[in-house]
Amino acid sequence: MTANTPRTTAPQGARQIAKIFKAASQAEGAGALVHRTIGNHALSVLDPFLLLDEFELKADRRSPGFPDHPHRGFETVTYMFSGTMTHRDNAGNAGTIGPGEVQWMTAGKGLVHSETPDYATGDVHGMQLWVNLPAKDKMIAPRYQDIPLGDIVDVAGDGYTAKLIAGELGGQTGPVTDIAVAPLYADITLTGTADVHLPVGATRTAFLYGIAGDVQTKGGAVAPRALAVMTDGDTIAVSGAAGTRFLLVAAEPIGEPVARYGPFVMTTREEIIQAVEDFKNGRL
Image 1 (cartoon, rainbow, N blue to C red):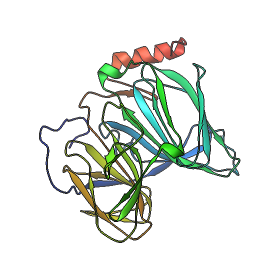
Image 2: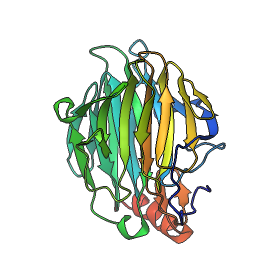
Image 3: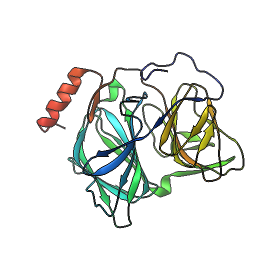
């Protein structure tokens, strides 16, 4: 499966690991540390996913986080493990998300925003995923879906529990809606009592990202801060000790060209040049 090639068939059966990518640590923003799997030289794009960072901001260093920066042409998904982050944009929007909460931001035609940590309760730790938009949606109006903890769906499955952010799992539906790539985003913890079979949809791109413990699946094990790209199939079979925790993310590939320059993701070089010009001239 190449990064930008849509599938023409819908394979059935259990997926296995195609390749594992260990996170590469780097500085980002204003002194923040991120552990990046998608979006670096080893895995630049996993259609429709553009970037996956696990970010850490230490209370004893007081990094200001991610000051004003622009986005155009895609969506950012911020999921908090601990601490809180406040976002503000140049249209006057603002909001705060805390532990277990989510912001799904559709940048669309563009905005300038900041993401600022609050160290009142200690370190700030979470995930940020970038999801591409199809060409027809790249210039839609920006919007936010801020999901408080009480709206995150708790799923009790056979051999696992899950925090469901988007998509369907265990007969339930997550609170994030109306996303072009029909995503599944779940934070899953194994109970260690049974092998687990997770439906993902045969036509979707899917990956596992390890958070705690080693999750065993067909073709190997996924350790913390490693991402496993999965082959085609309609289910993923996993097992592991009680407390093993990982993200399961899947979405329909877009299958369009990706033109990318920093915080701008479009389909042509000309659109990227226009995005840079618009930012320089205050039109985002």
